[in-house]
Length: 184
Image 1 (cartoon, helix red, strand yellow):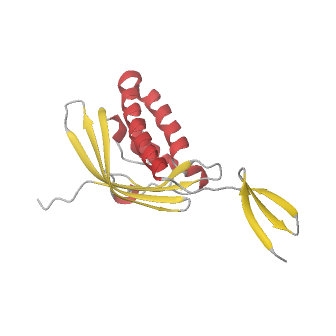
Image 2: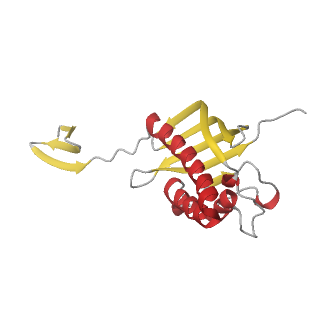
Image 3: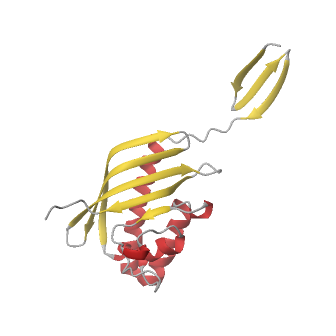
């Protein structure tokens, strides 16, 4: 039996002896534009948390940070491999949303953080050394530059892993951040 598969208006169809069986096509491949947009959105969200803290206090910053974690990260789908910049000891790795929230806004006695997002960040910029995309996953590695209200720039080494969820939304599943090595 000769069988041919073709795509018509977003549906895959198999033609066998004149009978067409249509099925929806679901393509969950990540694009470079989606990765760049996710990285830009992360920076915008960090700036928004910082601004909300300045203008509305910890409660407003916490609400924004929670919304960011819900929208951008994959904690609802499993552990996220999150190693924040300024962590050490038993709380270095944050595989739960509670740990990530504590890093961004502090205030949790289980995590000794002062709130990385509360440092008055004013500007954000990123430069990728490389982007690796494979199907529904993407990895990036490069630098993130953050500028505070005094104009001081902090550069961090950043590795992100992104995965599309079942709804086609790109989620952060790996977030590793560290200060660049200094021999001094």
